Length: 73
Image (cartoon, rainbow, N blue to C red; front, top):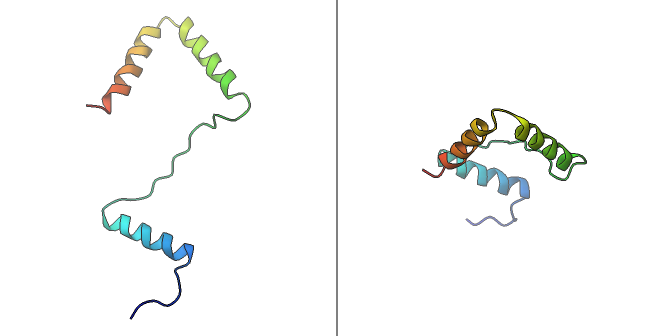
């Protein structure tokens, strides 16, 4: 027999998540920097200046490039 009332948003979400879990997936929450936060751009510039002034700049840049390419292999 068909369901007469539509699913609530909570029920839809629960079914969706159950389906994903049955596919072997699990939810993960990731916190990232807020690029719109006051001071974000200034902090980026500060860190870039520190890196540019560092004697280890090439080592750090090589690591970052390798890490960025790692996912594409």
